[in-house]
Length: 70
Image (cartoon, rainbow, N blue to C red; front, side, top):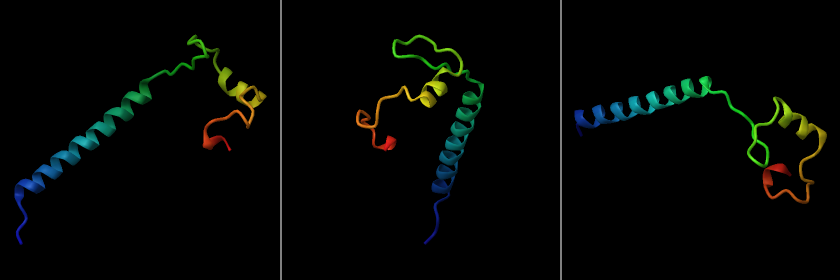
């Protein structure tokens, strides 16, 4: 059975596009400056999200709907 040169070229082309997209997304995400928002959509003070988690102000274990917070 012979391999089709077109198939090899096509798979190499698709792989190159995929790797290019991954590199592009990595570069763009490194340049972003994310801002945490509160419940009403207003920007929080820097570090407010992490201190709220440590202070225990999140919902209690019985109110959590996600299985990841078990």
